[in-house]
Image (spheres, rainbow, N blue to C red):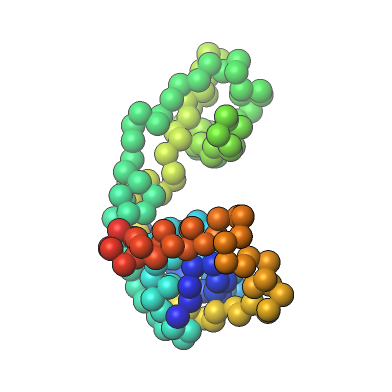
Length: 174
């Protein structure tokens, strides 16, 4: 079984209840390379991967609160058009990235007029129950040199992250 901090190769197909596919590594032609604990995948998907052996298949279904969040109407905001450069050229129905104090924010452009731009800052899958079909292809074993880059007690905090994620897994909060 893989542990937090290890890299795994995984095929993952994500679908909505209506059958729409939003992620498919098989269609993309290569498994995903994921460092467990990095936050690249949803915590429940990473926890499932930690309980799998190479070659194993699992299907998990996640409610909106376990996956991409409950849709929050308060995250739909009207912004004065003059605050966004070239607001008249924004892709209505498309997505843009905005620089914020805490990093980049992806938002859907709901509407644009001369005075305001309406943006939906919810994750595009917010409010949806999702299903993941997961195949653990392999665990990528590090060389001795790669392991030495993160020895026990290293300053990057990987040991603390590993301990926290394992506690959550053991106590059922993952």
